[in-house]
Image 1 (cartoon, helix red, strand yellow):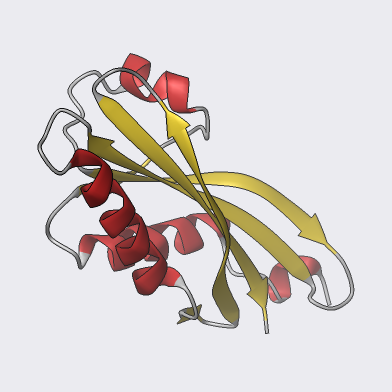
Image 2 (image 1 turned 180 degrees about the vertical axis):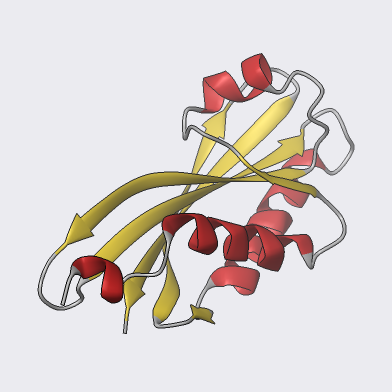
Length: 135
């Protein structure tokens, strides 16, 4: 059977991640075509924090699992607020809670890593890498 018979559509997986993240009402969520944090405000100058942006990072193929897709969720927090750094870590944890262990068809989402990135004087960004693979 061809690989496409085993693997969920990338767009469907990204849409599922966005839908899961949108179930938490306290942030702005959307798909973003890059994992480069520096490009976020260049392409989305009106983006308001807190926010979660879902991006495709990579896809690999093998025998078992048949496919492994990496999705990055970039969580942005306003550092000018009184609780900016704390709220960034809090919403990062919320992203993990909403995605880790979730299944979409035969695909399972697993949190792999999270890292902090400074994206300017008023914003903190956390990159959460999610592995999505068939069961």
